[in-house]
Length: 509
Image (tube, rainbow, N blue to C red; front, side, top):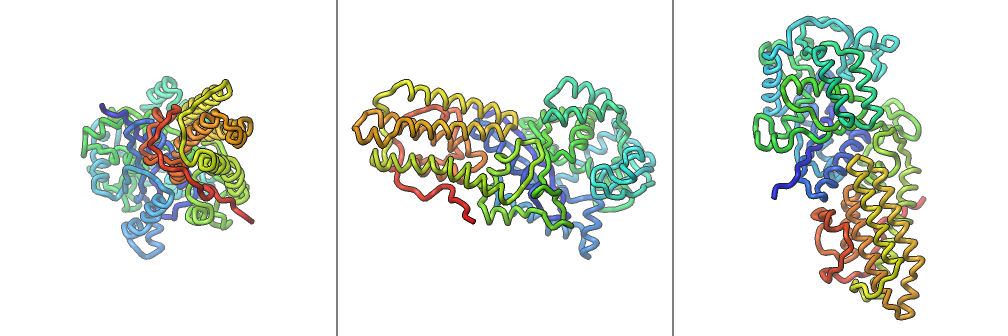
C-alpha cells in the first residue's frame, strides 16, 4: 500500500554569513514536523538548502578577494555541518548554483515570458541590497528600507517585469477561499491587507551585477534572486527531472519561513506558480523572531547566538526542546541562558527525568526488571488509561496545526498524571503488602513512558531512544508508528530493565 506523502521545506539560506539561532529555529521546526509525520506513517520529503546568488553575495566575495562561487563552496558547509550537529533529518539539500536548478529557473522564466506574463521595460525606484527587495518612495520609512532600516539604492536600469498586477484579483480570490493558506492568522491578515491595496508589476531581472542565472532570451540580464530562490521548491522535488516524483509530492504541504520573508512566499510565489499553471503550496507558516536577553540580535551588539556553542554547552536535544517549549510557535521569543537552564532543570530533569528514573528503579527493584501482565484493575487504573489517551489525542491535534508549544504541554500534563498516579498508588506499598495490583500499576507506568518517548521523539530523538532503551524496548523509536504505540499493550519482547544514569542531568551553577 502506498504511503501518504508529505512535503515540507525551509527557506534556502543566504551563504554570505554563518548560520545563527534563527536559521536553526526554522530548520529544527521543519525537522520536528518531518519526524512527526514519519511516525504518523507518511512518506516525507524534507527539503532545505542554500541561496547562493545575488548582489550581496557578489559584494561579500569581492570584499574577501575571491569569486562568488568560491565563497559559496566555502560557506555552504557551515549549514551542512550544523544540520548534522542538530540531528536534522532532511531528505534533500538544494544549492541554487547547481546545474539542475539553473535549467529549471531558465525553463520557467522562458515559459512565463512566452505566456506574456514577463515583459521588457525599465526599472526606476529604490532597491535594498541586504533585503533584496524593491520599494517605492511611499513604502520607505524616513528614506530607509522598511524591513532593515538601511539606506536603499536608487536604481534605473533596463529590466524584465512580471505582470504581478494582473494577479491581484486571482490571488485575493485564492486567499479568501483558502483561509489556512497562510498561518498563523495574523500573517494571513497582513498579506490579505497588502494584496487588497493592489499589486505592482515586479522587476525580475537585473543588469547591474553578474552573479546569478542568466535570463535565457537575453544574457545581459540575470534573473532576480527571489524568482531564482523560490523556484528551488520545484527543483528540489524533481521538477523537469523526475516527473513521477514531482507529481507525487506537489503541491508542497508547507513552506516554513520567518515572518521577514512572508511577502515573497505568500504574494510573489503563488502568482509565479499560477502563471505556470502549477498549484500553489497548501500552507505557508511564518514564525516569529528571537531576541537575545531582551535585545535584537546583531553583530554590532555582539549578541549573535552561535548554535554550535549552545549545543556544546547544553546538549542537542535540550536546545531543540527549549526552542519550542519556551514560546508558542509563530510568536517572537527571547533566548537567555537562565531560561534554557530553567527549562532543563525544571521540565526535563525534575519532571520528566525524575519520572523515568523512579519508574525504571521500581521495575528493577519490585519486578526484577520485567514488566508483568496486569492482574487486577480498579477505577483509578482505567481512568489513568483514559486520561493518557486524551492527552495523546490533544497532542496530535496540536502537532497537525503546528502547535508545538501546546503539544509539549500535553506531554507535561501526561507526566503530571503519571507522577500523581505513582504518589496515590504507592507501588512500594503494593510491593510490601504483596498486592497483585503492583503488576497493573507498573504495567501502566511502563506504557506511559513508552508513549511519552514517542511523543517527545520529534523534539528530542536521541533522548527518546535512550528512554526506550531504558525501559527494555529493543526496536528503534524512529521506526515507531504512533498509531500502534499510542495504545496500551503487553509484550514479553523486552530486555531486562536495570538501573540507569539520569537521562537529563541537571545544570549546576
